[in-house]
Image 1: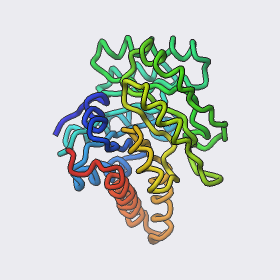
Image 2 (image 1 turned 90 degrees about the vertical axis):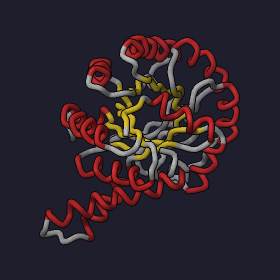
Image 3 (image 1 turned 30 degrees about the horizontal axis):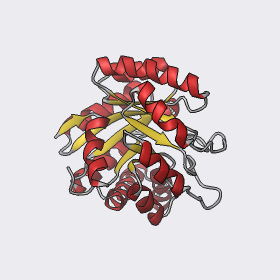
Image 4 (image 1 turned 60 degrees about the vertical axis):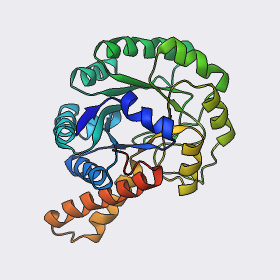
Length: 277
């Protein structure tokens, strides 16, 4: 249908109180499963690759796959770089027809995060690309390499951060972690409510894999417009491969792709973006 920016795809979601899923890819099969699910559910979708995963799928390969699938998709697709830390890679994504990037300065102090984010925003805006940033720090890590602690988003810093950077979406830390949860998550919904009262941009939930259905409904009800998913798809794909004939790669590949699709279909319905394309 069309390739859209993050700002465009989240406008309706924010107004109508549903969530749009961001789904990270690690290979062609994941990308195909995601787009197939979005088309089947008539849902807008955010197709993404995380910087940390470019050691598995080089950025140039991911970009080629994502752009081709997005151009041919029957639903609106946003092309996103997730958790960009390298400004060189972020600028490459902007110059490679991506319509959205996330600058992750969450490990920096407040002023450094603002300065780094603003630098990316200024470059992205000249190209018509949306920018997401993170205030606070979601725990864990995208590739499971560490178990960093959650640094909860400070409500009082939100208005100044948004105003001084000019971002289009804000990722918040309210108790979620990246990767597999080692214990049952306890989300600070009151903090989310307070953030939602002072924000002027859509809010983003990272570390979505492992939350309960009620957790998702509750966060979307209280201001979340974008939900990031990766681990759930990876786990489903691995389990599907184990169930398939282990002597036949030809059987494993479609089984993994269909498993990813099933996860994405379920998330789309849960987030309420089905029939919103």
